[in-house]
Image (cartoon, rainbow, N blue to C red):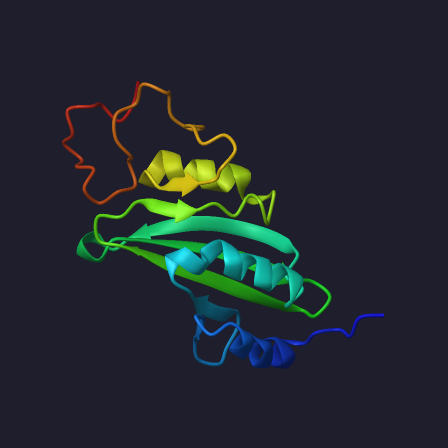
Length: 154
């Protein structure tokens, strides 16, 4: 029988993933990884840290600093959560998909694609889900002007 992993244990085990930058003490455990290690870290979180429940995903547009993808995963048995983050960098909109690791990431990646234009590489069906296919632009980007020639409502 596997040993129950606690939040303290999880923080210690994060040292096994050398590319992870762990935030200060507090809840949830905030971890930042390079975009190239995004899917690999998600698999580590699931298989090593026991974070089997994919809660949500979103993104932040930091303007000149580029996009940041965030995801929240939980270890229900151990009673702790991870807030995973990755910065894509200025002008970059590609990120590895987490769908091969967490099936629950499917629609949330599609929503991030629709709203932010993030191309999730390896996603099985990356297409718009909230806006019509002929919509121009991605409304949650800060570069998507309020006075855009494309009306916000149709």
